[in-house]
Length: 323
Image (cartoon, rainbow, N blue to C red; front, side, top):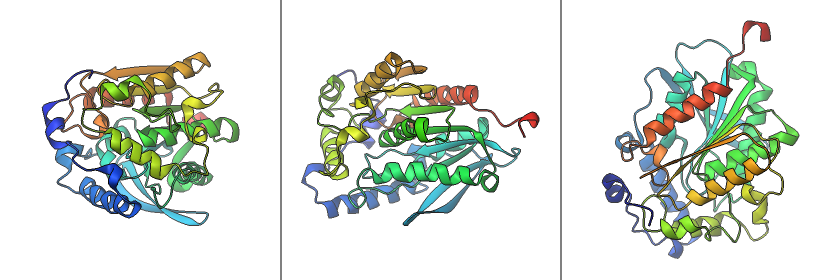
């Protein structure tokens, strides 16, 4: 094991659930229970308080064959045509909700400033991959089809994702380099970049198996229910793509106590080798999911500052001459 997790994380995040014994129906029921808790006001002791300078509203968006909920973070006193940051929560494609990232997203919205839109993408096992990725990309295209309606600058767009949301963010960036829209930046927090048969073969999996935040059983269950037999898992595993060139500037943030730490490191190596501008920061004593748990892991605060500085460097509101 690489080190000992913070005491609060070890107490609160202790996972006693036998994930691999759950049926699909039990996975769905567990997800609903977990997401109700993460969305509650009481959970803000762990997930953090939103920035009071930001208005948070629930909106819906109609996409082909489905309607999705969006959680929109907009500065109360900001000007028009702000940058757009499209955000994707974590949860292994089986749990997770946009509200768990209110602390990060609202502070980015207030201080960038930007409009941060968090997507309530569909979850497995009802909606396995690639449905969540399609939700993310289709939402991005739809938002930018009507930039005036959302009051965003279509020339100043970034994607942000944690864990499985990092999978979505980077797959969107990979698709956008060919099909558009152009992206200025991507931020990936402890991303899951390998959903293939080699997913659990990275050294950090064994080294951090006993740390809270993500168990090996939960990781295996996520892969079992979210990657259907009909899907080539390499198609949703960014680290397995042959060509990672021509992607937007990238920040990857990992935790030294996270089983997925090596997946982030390996993806950074691949990006660098293919010529993408990429930066990696690995935070010590940080477990999986730590940026959405500032009440338990102090590393969330410097990580948030780093993400903010990176996005400020790459996003800007449209100036008068651009209009």
